[in-house]
Image 1 (cartoon, rainbow, N blue to C red):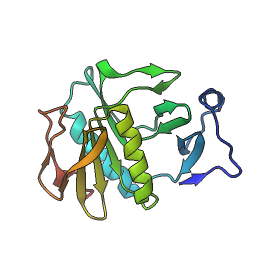
Image 2: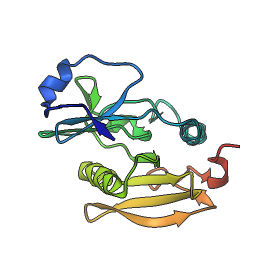
Image 3: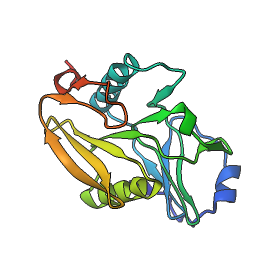
Image 4: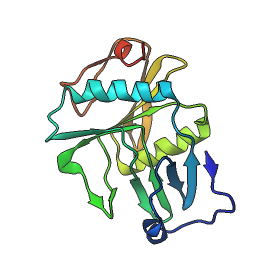
Length: 185
């Protein structure tokens, strides 16, 4: 991830005043705006497949499944806002302020990209854990695996690494996703 050239740290209040820019994906980590490359085609296809498989199993009045770029506020000071590839929220738990989400989803999905370093992923998962996120799926297109991480003692710890089989989110026990169906044809 690249930082803005000669960037300085921004506060939550300053960030709120910045204009929205189309076709730019960003996160803010400790007040530093990080511009991320747009996703590659295979990345979007995986996210779309998972979103479709989830959407078909939920009542949209009760559960939101979003793959849209949005700011998930981790903390306001120093400002940290993440942008997961996909997030699943029970509608009753969503806290929206200032146009951003200030509450943990029940599940996030991150599809690994070449720009994701192990250090960045550790930090991103720690940020999500600090919100109380109960579950994360880390999808590797290259390895054709899904790593399931569950919140335990304040950390998102590996529960399983799967190359096949059925994914069942812990917060939604009726949902089942066949791993073979998430890969683009």
